[in-house]
Length: 447
Image 1 (cartoon, one colour):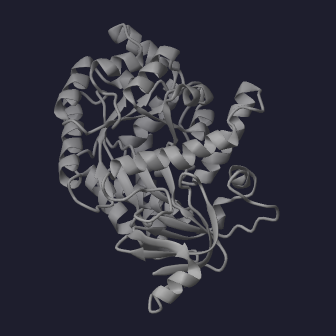
Image 2: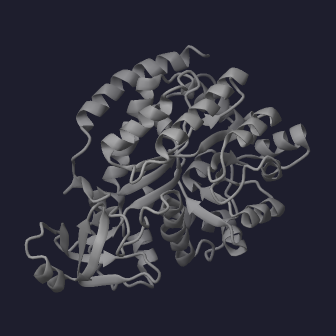
Image 3: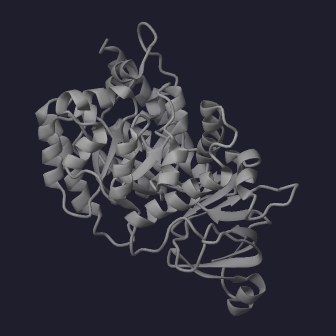
């Protein structure tokens, strides 16, 4: 189709804001980007979509999320309130993930994908846990991504907290999914190898995981979200977390570490030298009161920093706005998290991360010829000049997630004029209400 009557924000290098231009989509990709009149005259019989003057932008990307967390919304934690991160894990997340069955995994994912499509998030890196429903859990997530039409990289977070047999199940689930999906050309779903965190992994399990994967398969793991991860690693191995992971060849250009709040400078240097990706989740960090990583210094140091949401919600502009403000408050410095640096993280690094995992299938996260047609339409009407120099601040102070009216992945509309086309929201939410009650019952029985 031809998408006409739009203002195009390319997020290429350099970024451009194009008027009087149109996009021609063929075979999942952007086939032509040119003047609108020229394309209409060259392709007079092409189906046209009138964008009605809206912004046409690349879809948003999330570098770290947890679909399985959906049923936690509104759930009360029994007993006294949690006082630190360890208690949050032990009283909320670990009992919750142990309460999930395969049907819960499916509907948790579908809920997250409704949220993503509605708010223009077209590609996500999921980090999954369901210790009592491991085998086949990644199939539930992958099939849900396919059903929704959203692009995603999945993994199962291996841990020793359920014993060696469940750790082996997690290893097997990762390897099975990697072998199943990663050789499929133009597939929406890819897989990597998940690990929970250093604090729940023995040396033996880390070694098994390292030995299990082939070159080119990366890991996805929480790192130093709280000091307890560092304390545990030093106690178990005499090494800080990043040094411990480096010992077992976990780091590298195919690996994502999430959070990194309490790393020291040597660990940051190791990330840079190994070309490991780091995903930052400020809303989650604030909610868990674990602090904020020194992202400005990491960027200056050359670490490949991206933005995720940790399952908080798939409204990535909410994460963007929080990131911009939180670092100023945390550091008591209004010059922290400059808008241009934040745009580099969110629009360029996230795009590079996504494109890396879909290598050879067209760039993701930019509007240029040959890129994947993962696009959104945004009903934003600026009342001051918007240009490539100031668009990061228009996003910060003017954009709202509700302004996304249409979402497309691989040339297919998933939402058009705010109507979901691939998922039945009413059926999914009604079924999820039924399932979540049973999850909460199983959750409460653990106390």
